[in-house]
Length: 386
View (cartoon, helix red, strand yellow):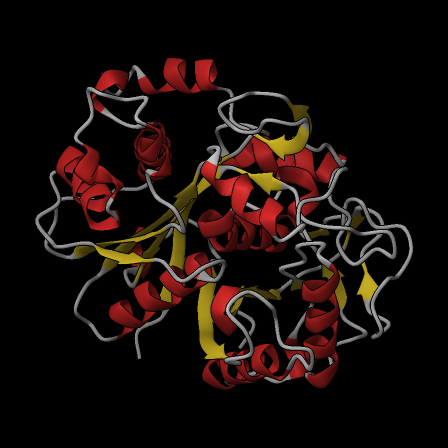
């Protein structure tokens, strides 16, 4: 079976417009979360992580006219451009497939603030087609929208397409923005924290929403890889616990099944995990469920973090940007502090990472869960870690 190499990546969040800027902030424990009173987002003060629109405009103008694209389209095009600039891949080749992920897409078009944009682009397929037109892509893109596991599912889908031999390269891009629509839904659940989120902490009281885009370029062509010991995709799996439309399973077995099956595909065991990048949304039920799933997998002693305290919950982008951060943890041999954590607040005694640490990291497991009972897990490691 073809090996799947991680060739290049890009992260755009409130912490910066490159992976390097974002990962540097993570290593220093710097958060991009701040309070906002922007009426386009919320009618009451709310902590969130928002990308500076003026900086986005300045960055994007070197590639196109901002008025031709929605805010999310600009972010996605910019992220893809930055990721591709570090490769020799020709995006409009028949050998290349684009896979997108988002939970809401161009949701701001609902608010009728852009009369100059065709409102059919609120449809996810139309958003994907618009970005593919920009790059001149001949292949029909794939768009995955499955709640908060969308990003990980997109990577898994792309990797499996490459393993099948149908394509040689995959460009996986996930993104979401914050508009008034998004927080209103979570506020109706009373799921948004009145403070910056605190994953797995005893005082946690809800999520912090964030916006962002992540792009991960995958390839089967090792000759394109410049690193001597690249990070590769080993395996991934989805599951559904069918518990509730919005509430996670109380037992954690659905996420455990995803972890188990991801490790089976990777031909690895729970002894082959250096650290876990958890979903860690900081809601009472998600973190408790996730701790139980980690316990069921026999991984409660493995180092665990959640990166939501740095850039919030970026929804359809979360799985991708947090996988990219994990890949760079391997490359730079370090563990990132789980920001916002002080005291264990889940029933399983997890080994939460409480400080930045330099340590040899050869692999990691990334987990995610979402509305509708959806769960996903994915495993990456150095090529040499066979």
